[in-house]
Image (cartoon, rainbow over all chains, first blue to last red; front, side):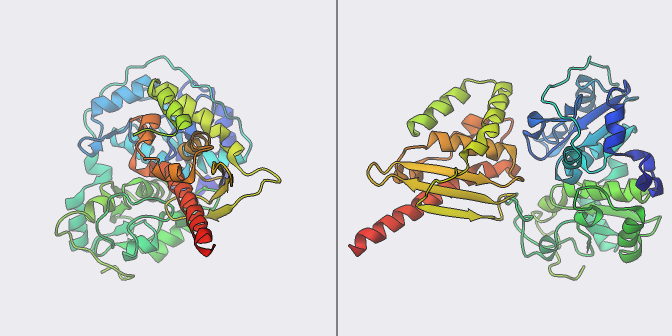
Amino acid sequence: MNPKFSSYAHPEVLVDGAWLQEHLDDPGLRVVESNEDVLLYDTGHIPGAVHIDWRGDLQDNTERDYVSPGGFAEVASRNGITPDTTVVFYGDKSNWWATYALWAFRLFGHTKVRLLDGGSAKWKAEGRPLTREKPGYPRTVYPVPAKRLDDEIRAFYPDALEHSKKHRPLVDVRSPGEYRGEITHMADYPQEGVLRGGHVPGARNVPWKVAANDDGTLKTFDELKKIYTENLGLKPDDDIIAYCRIGERSSHTWFVLSYLLGYKRVRNYDGSWTEWGNTVRSPIAKGEAAG
Amino acid sequence: MNYPPALEEIVAFFEGLSDGEKRENLIAYADGAPHCAPKEGEAFDLEDTRKDQECTDTVGVFLRVDPVSRATHFRINLGPQVQTLTRAMTAILCKGLDGVSPEAVLEVPQDFVPKIVGGQLVRLRSQTVYYILTRMKGAAKAWLNRERAAAGVR
């Protein structure tokens, strides 16, 4: 195991490129690429990796929700995944969408999940193999999960509102400019339909990026502990909600808090700022102060 | 609305493809995007390289207009972080608009994008596919303004 991983609360959840390259042919393992760049997988991916699209495969875009348990079982089955399959996620943008897909798999109770530290950029930088060949796996029968674990790792608007009112930990992982309400989109991106800028009153701003190194790998346990436990003051039993704009950057922070630091109650508010900022009469704080 | 003939041909080609075939052909165009970059020794009437908020990386737009025929020739340089779909659209636009007048560049409507890309890939976060056309129009407009200014001086 990569020595960096051993300090994390759940070291088994991370793999590095060397380990993954060695285990690509393991029968019980499926590599899943999930990206923001909708065509990136087609330009070259890890041999044997399948592509799961955050929007096309995991979301119900009519209801702005996730797919049903039956829909998830279908996605898993057609990619040759069973409940016993160890799924290793990776992708672009420092694994934003990989952690989002991993979180979505957890929503449906799939426990054997892993993340490739550094995602596709690190894999490519290390000169590891890529292919454009799309694999075909025999279809499996993934039993339809009894329910989606919305209560456990997902937060909704009323949950975030209650957290705000009761001064419980809310972590806004967007950029400081978004948090302060100066901009309604992140740098380098188009507007995604937000009418107002600012943050949820009481939320503290810890941008997702502080948990990652420049090469997309995750910071060490000690570095993360300093950021979230010492500086932000999160306590082991805290009930924590993380949000961003549409839930992908906060998936990254959810992963860090849950798996690397071991916080037991962390939820991702996927409605995030595009819901909060547009909701009539939802309270908003602007500026540096949490409010 | 009619598009310039070369662009019309590309749109017609893509409209007949399945989603999977569209993806394959978009990748082929994206692979060809580096050929749209300026070549050694080429001279341009207008060069505009910048990093805008709405795109993930720097984009350079280089325009040469034939003084007699007024045919435009674009070269476009893309930073490494520019997304694949935007790369594909760059190659499509460089080919599809090559040789048309600056006025014709300004008149190109954006509705060809979903016809080429297809419903599966059109999403809010991929709006930068429109960005390259906007930059090309900006360059054409700047060239026309310069032309008008020069005519006024005379």
